[in-house]
Image 1 (cartoon, helix red, strand yellow):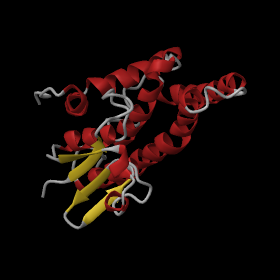
Image 2 (tube, one colour; image 1 turned 90 degrees about the vertical axis):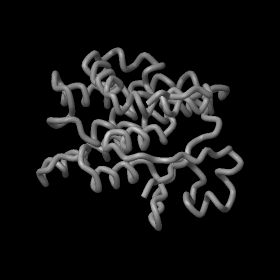
Image 3 (cartoon, rainbow, N blue to C red; image 1 turned 30 degrees about the horizontal axis):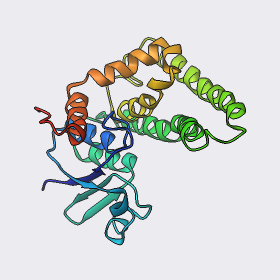
Length: 217
C-alpha cells in the first residue's frame, strides 16, 4: 500500500529542505518506498479534517491503510522499524541509533528552534538583542559536545542510520546562521548527509512543489 504524507502547500522556507516533511521524504527515499503527498494550506491545516490526523494542526502526517501517524520522528522511526536501511541489525546498535534520534529532536533541536523564534517571531522585542547571544551560546555548547563525540567519524555510530537522518535534518536549520561553520567536522557531516542520493531525491521532490518543475527522480 502506498502511504500518503502531508506537506505545506506554501512552505515558509520555499523548499529549502527545512520543513519537517523533508525528514519523512528522506526516510521514504532511503528505504525505497514510493509515497504520495497531499499539500495543505495553512487554513486547511487547522480545520477538523486535518486535526483528526494531527491534533496540533501541523505537518507532516503519515497515512497507510488504517495507520495514521504524526510527528516526523515517530514517522521516521516507524519506517526504520518496518523497512531495512535505516536501523542496524544488532539489537544494541538499533537502540543506540534510536537514542540518537531522540537526541536530535530533544537535545539539539530545542535551542536551535529557540534561535529561530527569537529571530523571526521576537525580533521586534526590545530585549531580543540581549537574548540572542545567550541562545547562541547554548547552541554552541551542544554543537561542541556533538563535535567532540563525532570526531573524525563519518556517522554517529558506525553506518548511516535514522539517527544520522534526524540529526542532519536538525543541523540543517543552522546553515544560514553560520554557527555550523564554527565546527568543521559537523559542517562536513551535514554535507555528507546532503550528498546521499536519497536526500537529493527528497530535496528535489520538495523543491518541485514551489518551482513547479519535475524533480526528475
